[in-house]
Image (cartoon, rainbow, N blue to C red; front, side, top):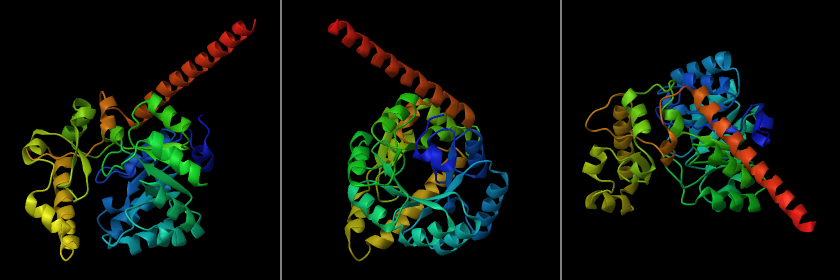
Length: 339
């Protein structure tokens, strides 16, 4: 057991959230996460209709033996948000993670139902706003995250938020080892949200090519691209990504800055980019674009969710024991000097 606010609040064994991953997270993965002693979260948008989303919530309530969460995009681009919130209030997942917008409406609807609300943040200003709105915790998305990463490393972002906010901080990004888990706990987080290592899990409902890419590529093969959504997003530098480049061309960049059309251009860029990711996730072609973070550096083979968690915790325990030995040596050295 590693005891933190996260483990005590949700009665889980380890302070780990299997991060919500677009196109990847599904009911099978969340059930496997619970069985492994952690808790999973899936984007509501992974189910393309309210009917499919409701069916997934029913399955999770019946089959998941531990807590689970739902990730909601809370800005105007998500035209399904109202219905998704209604279904969350009805079926009551254990927690909600809000992304890309104001969590105010989600907090108003979900907290009275006993659902905890966590908010993705990349800076202190937004963390303070979320706390004032009544968020239960913030997820500090740092520079090591996959997908849309934040600008700051966890060693800066977590203490900064801890110093200025009273609600718990959960770290997101860059953790793929037990030492990484220990490090974010030491600087003040109550847990960690881990995504990329679980892409290569046996339960992930994606093509073997995508999983194998997470094994074969490493941190140096991750690039930021603006071609998928108009906002920098991390992808694996496959031959195709190298060929098309990672920056928008002159016309795309110009249109994204034009006040009259940038909203529509960004929306079209997003839809096109998500279609590219969807095509690549389930079948490998020469036009493969795979989203992942630098923590794939530590993925050495395809494993079950339980094996991934067990290996992380074994490494964590070894690092923890090593620190304790250093403390003992320091005490002995001090005593010897005193004598």
